[in-house]
Length: 345
Figure 1 (cartoon, rainbow, N blue to C red):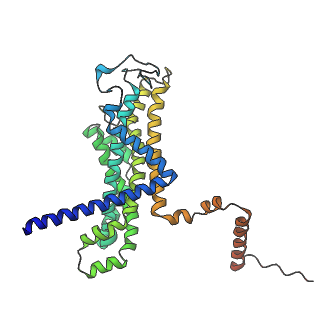
Figure 2: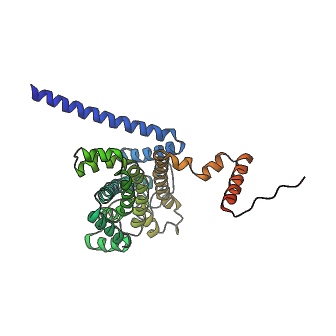
C-alpha cells in the first residue's frame, strides 16, 4: 500500500513540475507574442517548423523521387510555382520545402548543443575556479585561434562529406565564446546569498551548479541558442555552397551550389537562385528577431538605458536642451570651461 502511495506522490510531483514548466513556456511565448518584433519572428519560425515537419504532405512533389521529375528548366507556372531545375528537372518549390528540414535540424540542434556545452564549461570554470578555471580558459584561448574552415575541409576529406562532421566542428569550436560569457556571469552569481546558503547547508558542488547557478544563466543560454541557430544556418548554407555539405541531402546551400554549377544565371533561371536565397533570409530573420526580443525581455535595462532609444522616444526641444545642459554641467565640474561672469548692471 505504501509503495503505491509513493508511486502516486512521485507521479504527482512529476506532473506538477511538467505543468509548471509548460506554464512558464506559455508565459514566455506570450511575452514574445506581445512584442511586435517577437510576433514576426514567432510567425516566421512557426511556418518554417510546420514546413519541415509536414514536408511530405505540403510539398507538391518528392524531390528525392526520380520518377516525379518534369522537363528541365521549366519557368514558374501553376504546376510548378517556382519552376524546375535545369540539370535534373526537380521541382524547386519541393526542394525548398525539404531543404527547410536540413537547415532547421542543423541550426537548432547545433545551437542547443553549443548552449549546453558552453554552459557546463563556463559554470565549471567560474564556480570551481583554480586549476579547472585555468585549464578551461587556456583551451578556450587555443581554440579561438584555430581556423575552422580549413579544419572542416580536412575532416570532410578524411571522414566524408556529411553533416555530422560539420555539426561536430561547429560544436567543438563554437562553445568557447559562450563559455567566457557564462564564466563572467557565474563569478557574480557564486557570491549571491542563495548560493552561500546552499554551501552552508552542505550541498555538493554539482548540485549547486546544476540547481542554483545554471537557472541563473538560463536567460543567457536561451537567447544565445536563438542567435547561434541563425548563424549556424548561414554557415551551413555557405559550406554546402562550397561543396562541403552532404551530397545526398537537399539543403538551401546545396540548391545555390547546384544553381551556380548548372548555369542558372547563364540561362536566366532566376527562380532557381532566388528561392533558396529567400529561404535563408527568412530563417535567419526569424531567429534573429526572436533572439533580439529575448535579450530585451531578459535584460530590460538594455533598452531602457539605451541613449539611442531615449533619443528617438523623446526627441523634442526640451530633451535636447536637457542634454546640452547636462554637458555644460559636466564641463563646469571638470574645470574645462569657466563660468561666464555676470553682467554688471
